[in-house]
Length: 338
Image 1 (tube, helix red, strand yellow):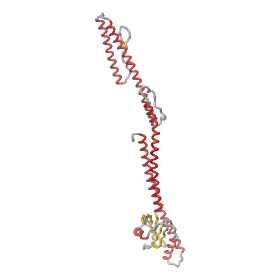
Image 2 (cartoon, rainbow, N blue to C red):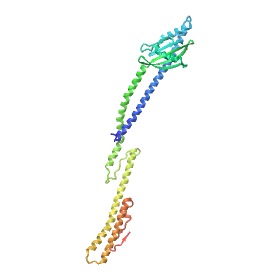
Image 3 (cartoon, rainbow, N blue to C red):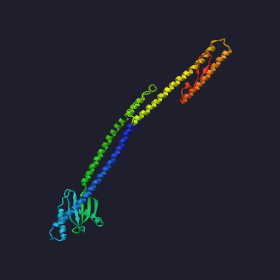
Image 4 (cartoon, rainbow, N blue to C red):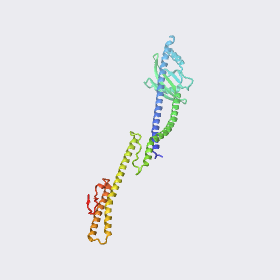
């Protein structure tokens, strides 16, 4: 399966894209979670400040016939009754952690006072003015902010709780969208990567088909070069250069064989002619036979030298043999020149 370059390229393309998509999905989910948490904390803080400002306004409008403590308590109660926050609960406690008032929307599961008692204890043992907490209660998640504040110079503790059901639903929907979209994107990228790899390797297939048709009889054929600037064009240029060198080598070899055949033909003809002359007459003298044998001996030495040159040139692929051997000068005097 992985013997095909197209499949390997599509596999690596899909794998890298899948890793990028997974990294993007994780980053996007973490960023969404961080953004929602930051926005929730900011909203809790703003609601707490708005609640304190509303109490101060109510406190200024109360008649002076009430004592300061009664006026503050009444202002707190009236301010609490005037609040209408969706999915937000507000608790206000005095210095002895006694509940003075609470505001609870009717469309969410509310927190009980006993469920936030630990938060009051933790806040009373710290110097921090505000603290944020996560609380699981009533099959729901809550985000709480407990803040210390002064109203009419009296210390109070204000706790604002927010149900995280909508945020959890939003994150769940976003996660489901990622879990559905990422596999679809990976599958589409697999097909797209295979198509792109096939299209990118099409020139290689064409060069392979063209190269398969080149043999010893048509070394003059060259591969087509569509783009000299890219890697495939450079590969075709290099391959054409190799074909040119092979063609030159084959041409030199053909010339070498032609020259070798021509050089071997002359001494062989002389040997054959001298042997025919020696065998054609029965009344020849010993000196004639000796002369013929000398000629045959000289030509055999010449043949030996030619064969040695052929072996040397054939092994070293150097200059043609015609430049290094002797040629026979026609004539009965059997003279030779080099």
